[in-house]
Length: 267
Image (cartoon, rainbow, N blue to C red; front, side):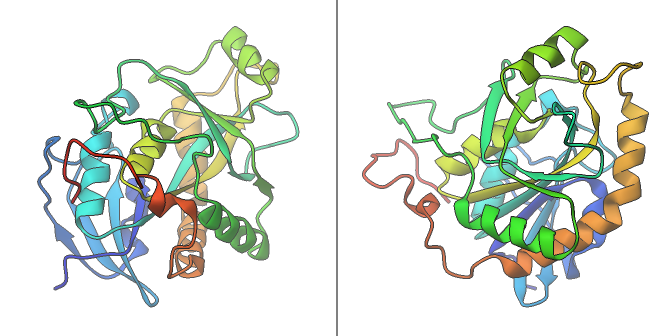
């Protein structure tokens, strides 16, 4: 068995059946254990590592996910490109449930999450464009070809959770021009940049957020039910995007740390 992969997938427990010939690998990191064992296998001709973001059985709430350990573990297995499917709420009336958004920007509204590997030394990594342009292009083209209602671009605002937004907060975010809202896209994206990884998120809209439409507001059970009803279709899409990712990285992501003296040695 080869404990190495080129592409990482961070998703929910419904993605366990994603891989062919999979086996589990336990990885230790300087930041503690990752959220669960990592499954390593193949999708077509690509070697892939899968980690359940919240752990097996949804053990970790959004604000307790060991983000640094997860990202470090994936890189230590050789991963250089990451796909991150997730469920989100829509802040725009025209983006409804079932739409797939491939965001190109992110806004951090979390608090207290460890969001850097560089606790010593002055390391400032460019984050103006947080997502991989090659990954985004591959995901957008693949989703559209597969018949998804695909939104190319938009801003994902990440809130602390685990509660949902008030109507006032939701209207505030929408008024700022942001597109979708979630709880897990940060600090994954910035940690990926600090490890010079390509990172692309595939955001499945499960509902309109509380301030977008009148009504009772979304519930946790409704979000899980919608995502579960679409998980097989999402698995298929993720597999297709994995095979569509470029084998050679020509994007800027791999050069994110060029010229920077790091206080730690990366795996």
